[in-house]
Amino acid sequence: MKMKVNGKVWLVGAGPGDAGLLTIKGKQLLESADIILYDALISTEIMSLIPSETEKINVGKRAANHKASQDEINRLLLEQAWLGKKVVRLKGGDPFVFGRGGEELELLVENQIPFEIVPGITSAVAAPAFAGIPITHRDFTSSFHVITGHAQFGHAQFGHAQTGGNGKIAFDALVKLEGTLVFLMGISNMQMICEGLQAAGMDKEMPAAVVERGTCAKQRKVVATIGTLCVEAQKAHIQTPAIILVGRVCTLADQFTWAEKRILGGKQYITTRPQRRSSQLTEKLRNLGAQVIEMPAIRTACICKNEQLQKCLYEIGTQEFTEEWLVLTSPTGVILLWEEMQRMHFDIRNLWKNGSCIKFAAIGSATAQELQVRGIIPDIVPDTYCAEDLGKKLAVAVDKRARVNLLRAKEGSALLFPPLLEAQIRYRDIPIYETQLAENTLLTEQVIELLRAGEIDAVTFTSASTVRGFVQMIESEIKKEVNAGLGSAEAEGGLVDYRKLSAVCIGEQTAAEARKYHMKIHIAKEATIDSMVTLLSEL
Ligand code: SAH
Image 1 (cartoon, rainbow, N blue to C red):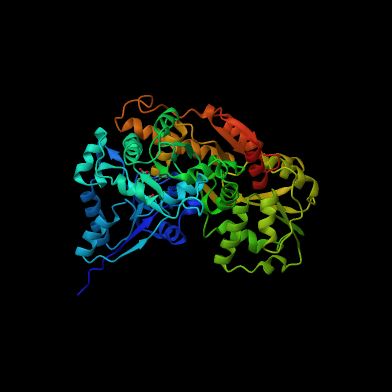
Image 2 (image 1 turned 90 degrees about the vertical axis):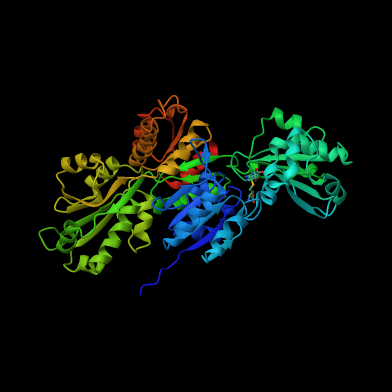
């Protein structure tokens, strides 16, 4: 008899928004889950850590004026676990801090579904920290208290709160505690909270602050007193999600401002390189304080069981050519070439077995670097990363009786050929991988919203194909929006205006592609990741 195997549910806290504040366990689960049910408050940066092929359901999204109810979410969790899946229930901050995590567990326990809890950093602690407000401080306070400012979570009578009454928040008790008070979900009840505290005897000069979108690139803070906070927050158009802080520690906010002061503090970027190549750029930008959404716009697929390549490798030096060149035009090309050689069980020493002279060319420093870690220092690297210059450099360096093997992408630039043809150099173009367009509907939808809101400071492009892929991802989602009967694109918030978009390009060819969409072009001085990072820091 076959046993039914149940899956398992992980209740995971995603933290307050900054991807660096996700726990290691949380990140591992995002990368390995079969399905992820997530809430509205999860930042796009964190969503972009999830592999594009992982099934994702947004249970916080209002579809046709209807948000998934708690019952529906519970049922969905159960169903997916019954299917034997590894289910991640992803929640903003910590799952048990006003996250209804407890309710979701009840049904799991009842049905004996195994589960684990992965705590997250709650916004109650992280948002003050990023605003430069120590939540406790020996000189000011020795406790802090986290309170919901939302009726739904209070007692039944709390409903009065919205009409301005004292509701059920025990303001008297809170005031007596003399600790730092942190109100979550309190923005719409801010006035009631500030007045309630004063009515319970708190001095209207008591420092207070609001921190909106704490830890995120677009974080904002307003520092005032409980007497003036409402007016000041209104002036600044503070919106949810935000926390309200009350206590003398708020006076330190200016002195301790730090998040915005980072070189790339307050910046939000999109990177478009294929996932396996993007982390270096992303990491450097995040280290300088930026939020980075990884949106791979192309996928590189190895041409496996590559007979043409096999023939090339075994043939090298066996014929009339005494000098043979292997030309690599991207780091990905080097990586995939070695992977394919491994699959073929090809020993690199075979290249030299006929005593011929083997030479290597790399298009740029990153490609050269990949060769070097494999023990090969390329014979030529052009000064500028571009196919045409590589061709010219080869035309000079290559012996007339040599043969050149171009090991590169199927759609590689044709600009490489003319200099070789002119110099009458014999070459073979051998595709070792293809670039394909990427797809990631949910992430693209979120990115479109951010683009429309003007919240993306720049998009980085490392090849013309990433520009094409990016635009295609955006356009096909917009088309779906329109086709779904949501009216014209204009009615749905408009098309994406690329003219407002800063495109940071690795080189001239990439920029030429971005120019077609009238993006605001910035070109790195050198065709390197470091140079792109420097450029972004200077913008
Ligand atoms: N479990 C979450 C809280 C969920 S209740 C946590 O531990 O953080 C939702 C409330 O959390 C919001 O109304 C807001 O008050 C607060 N919140 C969540 N993310 C926030 C952020 N990045 N900045 C400020 N407040 C945030």
